[in-house]
Image (cartoon, rainbow, N blue to C red; front, side, top):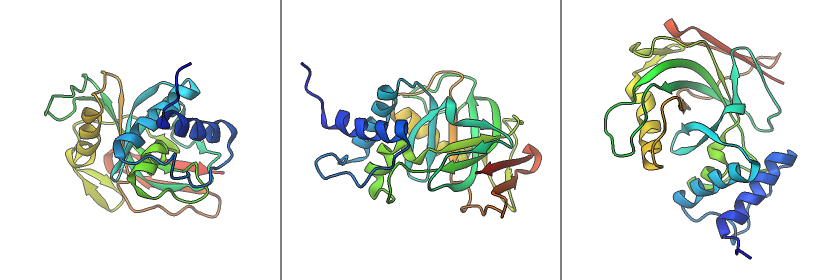
Amino acid sequence: MTRRTRADRTAGWIAEAIATGHPLATLPPELAPRDRAEGERVAFLVLDALGIAPCGLRIAGDVAGPMIEGRLLPEGATAAPLRHPVVTAALVGVLREPLDPDGEEPPALSALHPALDIADRRFTDAPAGVAQRSADLGGLGFVVAGAPGDPTAEPIAIGPASITLHDALAPAAAAARRMGGLPAGALLVAAGLSKPLAVDAEGRVALGFGSLGMVTAQLA
């Protein structure tokens, strides 16, 4: 009988929380991941436990984690259920070419989507530290993406501000390379590109991305 590792046991707890919808209490010291690498390993083990294959990588601030196809929603969709939603601007790049782990060139994109990232957590209290936040799928909730736009557009408007494509996607590309690279067609999701956005009285949130268009989402 194969002995389950610490990361396997932690992943089992988080996978159960996702499958059942029941939040977790703070992980006990004997299960809490000790560093970023262990936390990231736990996140991918969670997907293994649930039988889900990642479709790319998402980064929000200093935390990277797997992107899941079932968590990518179209413009105007309802993102639910979520317990602790935090909405920020995001960009979704579709890789035209593989992202080589040893490469240094900017990622080559076939499409670029404006998006709203709606982060969430599987814990009753916000996980402390990058290790536990990484294990919690990097805070992945849902990503509501608009129609694809020009992947070479510069700069990219985000509400009243703007950002270059390099500044937006470089951290996600670096994290993906650190984790072994990505194939062509995979997604690079850069979240947290704005301060948290307010939701109106009807549970709706919207943000303009200049020439890339408007993205709206409904939170139930």
